[in-house]
Image (cartoon, rainbow, N blue to C red; front, side, top):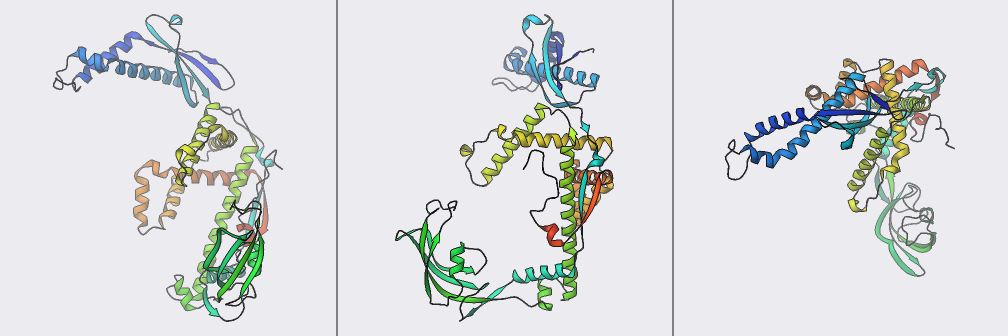
Length: 446
């Protein structure tokens, strides 16, 4: 079949499609005949319904299905003939009756094709790669955190000081009147832990059980309790008990508590060090990934297909709505427009197309061994690892996430061989800081 593709814009195309009426009618009759053998209509046994009644009951529906299938087949043939890469779905519309031929059904399909992706000079990209050695001091600090997580408290008769647990009663008043949420009985707080507002924290040290102290407290203007935000309250605080913290000793019992069957503190230290090294490795990979993806966005040029952007906008709005419902919001209270997500959707589509281009151009597709290794690694966290591996390989769709991870790993590795990599010595604390980002600021940001 010869067809002409009309170029509407840089990515938008249009093609005329025609379906012979004779072909449609033959297929309709074939399907109705097949349907008459199983159709159920009151008063008739299956297979005994008159063809006229089958046509009356199902003719319009079958005809629409046949036309849809024929148009789709014609469009698929055009796609194959011209080797088109469609971005999104085509918009198919019937042509006006006076423009077609009497023996043909005429349609036109409007669609977008994938853009030409222009990669910049990635050899000019700079990547910062953290170099981290997990030290004995890092292990000591982590063990101290583990001990603090298992802190016990013992009652003392002295005045409260930092890190003590204080059990108290308090009541707050604004203009002499108590307010909602401003009082509590037998409330336990750890001094200096930041559980309360600064004035409250400052009032507690130095107080003994049985003592009462009054102090003013100014609520911030942006305080979550809107009834008291920006107001000053007078609080009355009575301490009922002071208890000091006791950390478990770093001994055999503590090692067994944390899973060391032999009770060896040295085994515990090695286990902690191995876990820290794995955390650092994963964190460095995440930081490299962030930089690589930022570079892909900034060094790639293309015209974005509107259809893909709009599909992503709708998808993002739906995901957000679903998350809000899970958090307890009623569907009728969720006012989200896909347009709110346009900028994010454009960035995601651009990144996806850029990554796809690089993966195809440099053959970075995942290898079977990589995927199996990832599945096997995750399976080790289950009781029957081999059964978990078998389950994943039973259906291809179960491997999709692992294939994506392997592809991403290949991309990051390839980028490190193409770009200029600067190794930067860092401590374990520095590299694990949640706010750390090594990616350059996006264009236009402050």
